[in-house]
Length: 554
Ligand code: F6P
Image (tube, rainbow, N blue to C red; front, side):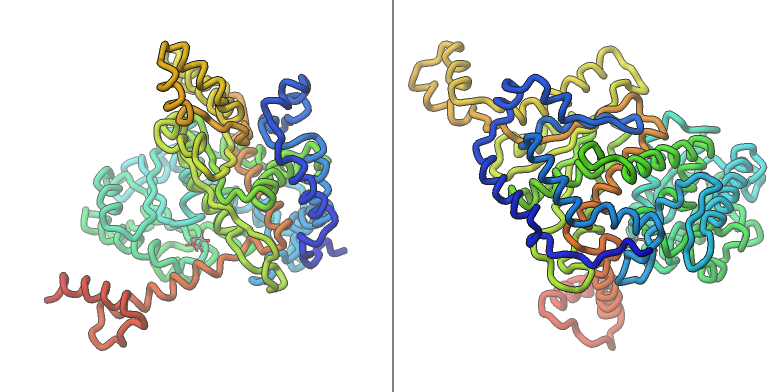
């Protein structure tokens, strides 16, 4: 049985029309009033699962809005699409691939068939291969060329082969085992290479070349530079295998680079790069926190998968988060979305989410090649609180655009220092409260009068002190950040992005736009470095090439 349906023109659905009408009716809705009028609002508009609690009561919604949004999700075929993904149908139609990162977190004993083969065997064989190397490194059985213990692991990879592993290994720093430090080398920038390698001892460093395709320019250049660095610092060709391993679906290219076959960990074309941290691409995570914690990460994500598949949409966390995003993006004109984690360990989450969301849903045609009928893919941005409060939150509070925000905060800190965490938590809550409440003209004037200002001064200053309020946000709360809860949190956003892609009818799993930049990059490089190359097509690019060549002549 096939679950896959061709995308509908979502804007023609009755539920879309109903939302358009409802949006007009909500024009003067006030959150502040809604909280006053309904003491059950918080209980009604919150949900918990997999160790996460989502409060979505500070939104421009009523229970009726939720019903209408859920109706849209149903009519657009979200349930069928989710089953199609989990069952391995080729929902990545432009690349003719199934999308099965969810298989990576399924327990042993389950089966998922791709082309008549149960891929769960491959998944668990790869986990066993990861367990083997992690155990050997943690128990000093894998040593460098001079027989010293491995203390530092450098992940050479970019995009999905970097952002997810970096987010998780740094978010779970309190779970580090055996003192293994992880480093990330992503950009093709000599300065980054220098800064990363400057901290390392060649004798105790392991490089993981992490590339699904093993064809990504930045990664290959960094890998070559790392090999040169290793040899230049006294490493030997003979023992190079102790310092270079790879994760890739292109085994041949890794072997040609000089990696021993048994030190190549698998990737599959049914896992997208930005969804790959759950595979052997997550090896730096496992080396940092150990396999048991890595498996807890997978279990947390699996728990969110089960919730997503089975929970009615009215209380389904990823569906609700996705549909709220659709509500603001398509019905209120919100062009961007802020992600605001109040925890140092989650500071890299925004970067991972940017790739996950914008590379997935930054599309203008539907699965069948027809143009989308509504806007898709908001800009995702943000950063760690409270730092943002002293930078860009001003725009959230008083700027002209409507920017919905997600606040993420743990109740318990891994590192209690005095009453820091109480203040951090209070800041998180007070920001969402301020966005919701704002400050009326009356309140602003009353405050100024209470300071003893003249009436003329009160009238002059009051407009600047008015905060519109009624600005929406979600808050996700959890206990401490643990591997399981982090796994659930990341999977929550993966499914949110997926649901939105289904609503918009697009393929969230290809990235053809990125390819153009890669192709043109090669052409420009030739024009910069080869004097017999044809000039650039446009005067701007040629002028900038000349500028470079002028500086590097001779
Ligand atoms: O940026 C495009 C992209 O293809 C991403 O989707 C991917 O995560 C990244 O490049 C790295 O690709 P690879 O793992 O093949 O080196």
